[in-house]
Amino acid sequence: MSGGMLVKICGIKRVETARAAWLAGADFLGLVLAPSRRQVTVEQAGDIIAGAPGRYIAVFADAPTLVSMEHIVAALPLYGVQWQASAPPGWQRFLSAHSLLAVSADPTVTDADVWLLDGPQAGSGQAWGWRLPETGGPYWLAGGLRPDNVRELVARLRPAGVDVSSGVERDGEKAVDLIEQFVREAKR
Image (cartoon, rainbow, N blue to C red; front, top):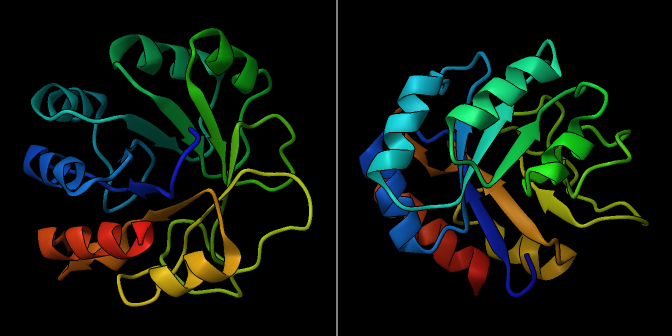
């Protein structure tokens, strides 16, 4: 995961969107398996992965157990797993054993590979104070990011990556032109 600015386009619901985001230079594609207007089923996620190249990260909220995660990891060729809230004990060890990236949106979690710093309500797309913690990392920024503000935030804060969903949507759907512009601005 070293190199330039990493970009994750989250909330992918269609093969065409996944393909366009990957071709635009996104490093990761997020598939929301938690209750959300962007939620996809495991079967839909499998179809998206089969239909478009990319490094896919499954996004969970409070999943009940490691067993459900094990089932999904076995069913899908994932690059990583992201927890939006509290993860089950042993999640990072399990993911590490499967060579999967562990992304946590909970700053109190101590055993993640990457921490996602999101707004006041994770996954809402709300802007916030955009500050990186003094210690730890690597961190990805999320929450309120758009093509017109991401370059300035990356230059000022120097996160390891950025994660966007609603900031590249128009009328509730991903817009390819906004995805392309976001990736371009984030990686400048």
